[in-house]
Amino acid sequence: KNIINQRIAVNDTFVYPEMFYIRGIYDMPFANCFYIFLIIVYIFTVIFNTFLIVLIYIEESLHNVKYIAVSHLAIADVCTTTAVIPKLTETFLFNSHFISYKACLADMFFVHFFSSMQSLSLAILAYDRFIAICFPLQYHNINTNSRMVIIILSVWLFSAVMISTTVLLITKLNFCQSTEVSSYFCDHGPVYRLACNDFYLNLVIGFADIALLLFAPLAFILISYGAIGFTLLKITTAQGRRKALKTCTSHIILVAMFYVPLAFTYFARISYNTRILNNTLCTTIPPMMNPVIYTLKTEEMMDLLKQIFAINKLGPVKCKVFSEIYEFS
Figure 1 (cartoon, helix red, strand yellow):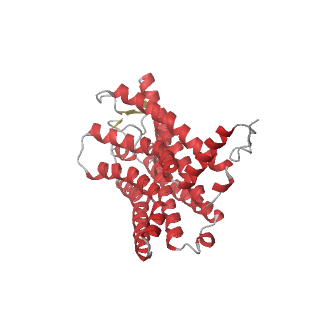
Figure 2: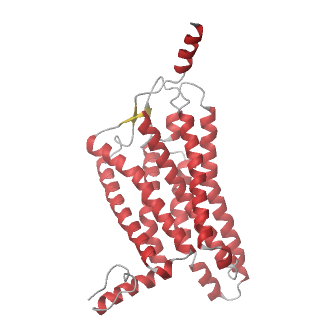
Figure 3: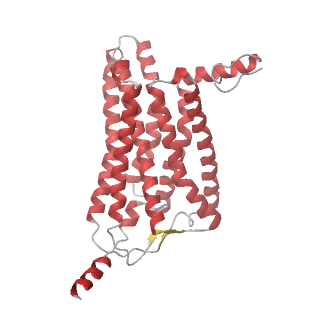
């Protein structure tokens, strides 16, 4: 009988709520307008990134290391906004702020996982620019297509293990009081702080995620550009320096767009609504702008688009870019 009672006590150790309540941004002024804005952002994000991915896929001249990394960033962008905005849209359309316990864990995993893939993708692009500028003669030997694919698969695996561990530790917590999550999704920090028992391990893994998946990639990017800057100083001609730096401008803009708002969130003292608004924009605006910036700021992409429009104006000719799909007749 004592053994049975002990087993019941063990089984009753963890108290899981049936539902969590996502506070979101419903009490923010003009919240309805903001939800509509996010829906529009999501539509354009999917269109722009899909166009970029298809363009890279069907154009053989873009089948190189750099554009493998660019297409990977585009995939991460689409996945990030898909993890965030549809759920917010459901909240807006059906006024549904409740989410089941298991759905909350799934939401936590996918939002954090794909958000971390954005920062890691920017680090991969920095690695590509570092090799291209600092070791131009060895670039094609060091940075091969197969090696880039291995790097991408490795960061996916690393991020998946980190975020899976983070979510798994949530299942070791008791939730016996409030279940209102002060965020726009099942955010890890606001969720584990609702626990009744000790959440020290959750605190540690939370800091580890931030350090390894956000700030370690940023540190790598800064070190890479420090080395790139040192290499540019060795170039004797101003024209040569400008040409080398021009290949980095689009990436620098992407890094600033992603990390500056994040730094504002982590280091500035801001109100709840301002923090939620800033975090939401951090995960939605950069994915929409990334393909636009890479298209407008990258010489290869601009030349390709000019070629497409020039061919369309010529009339009955075969379009090189889309020759795998159609013939214009």
